[in-house]
Image (cartoon, rainbow, N blue to C red):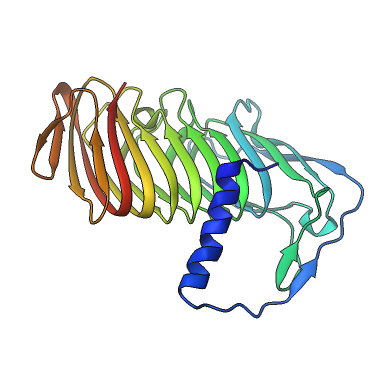
Amino acid sequence: MFPKSFLIAIATLALLAMACNISFNLPVKEVKVGPTVSEVIQVPLPAKAGEVTKMSFHFGAGEFNLAPGSTSSLVEGKATYNVVELKPQVTVSGNDVQIDTGHSNIEGIPRFSNDFKNIWDLKLGDVPMDLFIQAGAYKGQFDLGGLAIQSLDISDGASDVRLNFSAPNKAEMDTLRYSTGASHVELAGLANANFDTLTFKAGAGEYKLDFSGALKRDATVTIDAGFSGVTIVVPEGVSARVFVDSGLANVDVGGKWEKSGNEYTLAGTGPRLTINANIGAGSLTLQNR
């Protein structure tokens, strides 16, 4: 069962479409639910140690849980589903690995019954990788702490996602990109991601970016959000500067942030965190931890 925030996101999309006088003529397709199947997913480690693997997940509707912990495989776990079209497909080509939510022939807008089930519970190995996640309307729990991610790219639709770097990333991450629609998303432990640049783009929804962890080098963040509530959390003692282009958004400041025009600073030592926030409407909250 998706939480209230997720349902609100779906409703927001519908209201926006109505406000813009957009009409959709796609047919609604009833999706047949069958017996529940649990299927093991396991992809071996790359043949050549040290080479970067491109790991891609394409996930539709349902629940997707991803965590570290695979010691003998690149990825391992299971998929549980009760719609035959959602049988996961694994494609391996050299160091490119892709796992898809089936090859569905469903046309139009799918209508799932209350008995619909599609759950992935997977664990990743800590080999160097570029990680890509593309998803639709889903609930996600991602813990990527302690892995060796060199770049991370996530794009999804209406979603309810918590992404956490619970431990330092073992690689220097070049870019972290997250693009989402009308969603509820929390990014935690972001300093542990060890990224150079982070780009976060979002539509209507509620979003929290928490930069807890160990900031090892200067990092730049760009946030573009529409009609949203955005919360930025930076621990005390971290040197940070936030430039706000708020449009119609309200800015609420708590903790030890100091304001000068559209610039907010936090005194600290060590690497500097620079954040550019463009909030079209809604609210922006700055907090300390």
